[in-house]
Amino acid sequence: MNDVAREAGVSASTVSLALRGSPRISSATRTRVADLARRLGYQPNPLVTVLMQTRRSPRTGKSALTVGYLSFEAMAPMLRDEPIYAEFERGAFDEARRQGMNLEKLKVGAGLSLPRIDQILRARGAMGVIVSPLPPELTSIQLDWSHLAGIAVGPTLREPELHQVMSNHYENMARLLHACLEWGYRRPGLCLDSPSNERIRGQWEACYLREQTDNPRLEKVPLLKYDSLSAKSLLAWVKRSKPDFIICASPREVQGALREAGLRVPQDVALASVSAARAGGSLSGIVEDGYGAGAQAVSQLLRMIYGNERGLPEKPLKILLPAQVYRGTTC
Image (tube, rainbow, N blue to C red; front, side, top):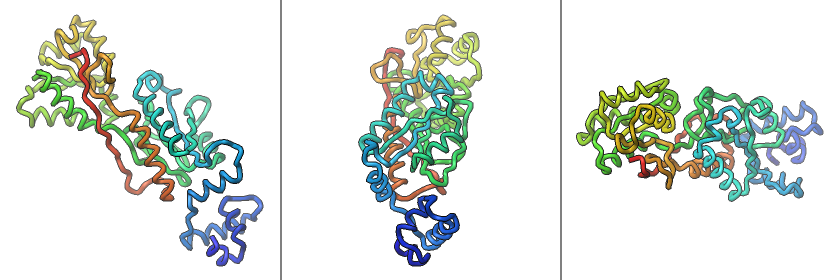
């Protein structure tokens, strides 16, 4: 800062105020100081920035390191009803408290538009944003990323491309198929709804098809993909393909169709989910580490903030977390 001040012919305090956009400094001076700072390669130290903001407002009781948590639960009931989404949030907020970060939840769509959220983030001096999973009809969001570090939880955000923390869906399917063999089943069939398949970019389908080709212990069962599932179409597939173990992404829908078709679980056919199982519950399948994903998102965002990484990343990373296979009473 002193280097910028000497080059500009002003005091270091003027440089500090100018770089913070203070109205006490003329716009011409602010522009000149900002241009010189960029030319000289000046970057503010985020730790010092937080310290100084805390000292200026010591009575707030909050950390000056503020980050937004964008929630879309107001736009889609599924984001309120499924426990995994609550686990994402709980992990993020617990880790933020542990790290001394002020994580603020902003509900998109609950009277808050994205432009309004942009204004709120700027007004509160937020340094970063965590984007929680999006509803099915949304694949992109627009914010001014120039002053923010950003990371997304899950694979649902397509544009812009941010760093992402998610479960390893491809590996999860492989683990579930191998567990199926260990449990004594030989004809697992994948019953997959198109929206779920699209949200994770076909990773379950790709692994299932590869395993059926490469694993001689698995008997080949044709994949059932659907946009709308009926008991009639499900029963026809079961009679034609004879799976002894159904793997699905939407277990409530599939269980309902099986009951309507007169098929019992697990007596007539076993059932497991690639993402919705919970340890201690009745449903078998993959138990994702939602809590760990939320906590990891906070840790990675802090790394970016401390490294002065702002804006969209040149090389977006995908951080893949392992999951567990759980055997409940549905198989």
